[in-house]
Length: 367
Image 1 (cartoon, rainbow, N blue to C red):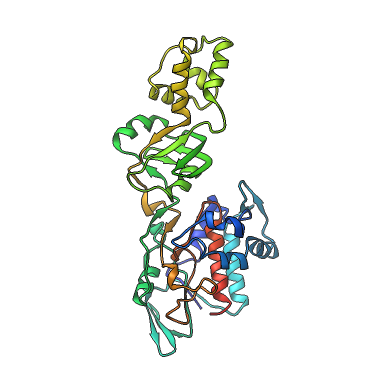
Image 2: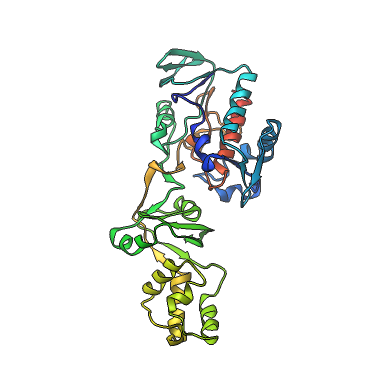
């Protein structure tokens, strides 16, 4: 029996990937999983991920005759609506003899003899095992809550600190005053925090920065930290402008730079470098200063948009209390925790769905 307080199943699946569900990432391997999942114990996820792989889930999608495509960086999406994945899963549930109870609030899970009793808005339900797949706190308007963490703590399991992840970052008023005119501008970028960097799109917003590169780095960023942004990664903007100058530098500097990046962004970068005038009037030192601004723009976000827009929750039920092979609580046979509620958080791009499928499969083999 599957209990869900929502009125419809799989709401996070339905809205994911722009409504097409980024259901897995085929680039995920046992070798790179430690780098692409964040946890107190990055090795914890390896067992489940290696036993139920992206290829295993793809095979299920293929059997359901759901057409899909690879968008970029191994990210797989449905050709049609994400609801196809929900239908596949609920059909499989029915075919196996399972029952789905929607609009059923969960009040408490408690030990009852050798099994458990789950107290719900529809009355108590006795069972031999309980699998907690309650997700995290992200997107509360869809009903997300800390229920799974409360259940874990009721049984004495440790829960790590949690925070929004894969979430847009916000700026202080003085920085926002400078970047607000750029709202809506998107550009490829390399965004770095410490030794971690992502090369994906960046989007300026009315509150700060978003886009895949920012969502990725948000899982590593902490309040008080700066991030470094290369707005033209893999290129030498100083050399390109110097060559443009040699070929005729009558263009205004920001117009010259606008040939290489969005116009509003070019004007912003030139102003941040403290430059003006024609390209022909800029010496090598000035072009070097501009290049530093393009390739090494540093900004210190003051926060994030929070759980309201976060795709996932970082942290969760500590892995030291769980068996990595079965997802069972070591001290409580028959009690399992899977998916986002566990302290395992993947990169953007289908990794968190794959963790949900893999950890759920691992628990399902023994529950």
